[in-house]
Every structure is written in structure tokens, then in C-alpha cells.
Image 1: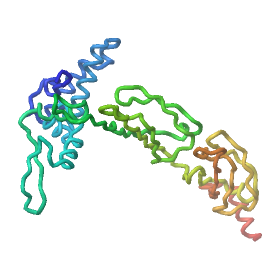
Image 2: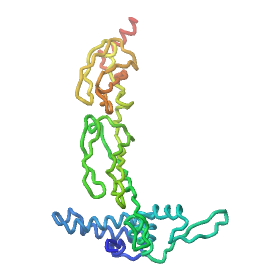
Image 3: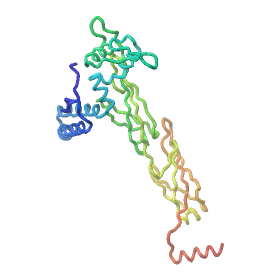
Image 4: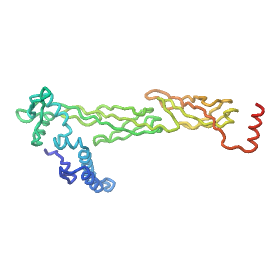
Length: 304
């Protein structure tokens, strides 16, 4: 029990505190111990981490329920209950009849010591002569979401993430897709009883600019072109992800004509080269005409 942290005591609360009281207590202490308010103060940084951990658990109804029942071993609640279900002779389980058939198991809530002893046996090698055989459990997996822009995925980049209190430098491959998940083995939370660490799953949220439509590494864009260039042909400067390009527009181009700019799309994920940029031409009609321009258009109509 030496390592037990009383989250309620840490926030200056009792177990009857509601969500509003928890939130208020955390905010008050966070303002006091925030690293920005106490630069270079390791004790304040430690306190801030502790109250943040306490708030994370107590402000989550499911986590709080497990903490209230299992105390310091709340993170292993599922493993405890699963083990009890798999082993009908569990010393802390009491069989009860089930009106729908089979048997139920209920667990003593008379004190945290029972659970601590049980977890000590499962994860720490047993207690006394009657201790159980040491069992190893894999650490918890960690899920994270990382927001990126097109600029972030034009080449391999490195991001510094904080996972389980440790700093982890992660390489983000060029060309990752929105919603894609990257698995990093052994970078989750530590295992118990000598078990392996969990894994880290990073889901990417890649924002596509409104001017583009993305299809894997290819990009599609509607490109406005003035009427004269569409009719007579010419060149126009197009801005791409890697810079400006002079693009020839064929004369008598029609609405919807598609022009391909090879290699001007996004990098191909874990492959060489880039996708393409496709321009769908759209005539941009004038909204006003000078008197001379009006006469010229009339002349064109009359001569047609």
C-alpha cells in the first residue's frame, strides 16, 4: 500500500464529491501548480502531474467506479474480474445461483486489502506459502490522434509525443492518409509481472484543403480559366503543393476538360514518387463588359 495514491485526498475532496466539485478543485490546484506559473520548479511539476492524473480518473465515471471499488489496482479491474470468471475456485469469489442457469460470481468489497493481495499474487509473485504462481500481463495499449496538414506529409517528419510520462520521437511517413493508423509495438504502457509493454496506436487526421479532392496520392482541383484563354489558348500560372507551374491551356478548351500535371500530387505512402494533380477546367465568364468589348461580342455573334 506504500504506492497507493488517494486521488480524493490529492484534490482535497471526499468520496461524495460530484463532478462539478471535482472540476472546480482541479482547476484551482492546476492554476497553482501549472508549470507556466512555476517555471523550473520540479516539485510543482510533480504536483501538477499528480492532480492531472487524479482528475483524469475521478472525472471519468467508468474509471472512478473502478477506482472506488479496487483502489490502487483499479487499472487491473478487468483482468481481476476475467480471472475470477475463468477460475471458479477464486478465493475472493462467492458463487450464487443464477435464475437463468449457470452460476454468477460476486466479489468481496469489504476492503481494498483483499484486492491488493489478489493482485499481488497475480502480478507480483504471490504472498506467503499459499501464494499463486506469478503471472505476466501485457501492458495497456495506448491510442492517440495526431492532426496533420498537407505540409506535414510532403516528406517524412518527426513528431515528439508524450506517452505514459515518457517522451517518444515518432517518424510520420510521407503521404499518410486521413484516418490511417500506425502501430508502434511496445510503446504503450508497461506490462505487469514481467509482461511485455502494450502498443501505441496513432490515428492520423489529415486536413484536406477545400480547393482539393484527394484520392490516395492523386489530387483533383477545379481550375477557373478566363473565357479568352479557353477560346484562344495560352498559359496560366497554377499553384501546386511544391510551387508554381506554367500550364499550357489548349485553344477551344471546353468546360470540364481535364489536364494532368504528372508528379504534382502527394507522396505515395511507403513508395517512391508522387501522385498526380488533375485540373478540371471551368470557364470564368466576365461579369461586366466595356462598351468596346460589348461591340466585339456582338460582332462575333453576327458573324457566326
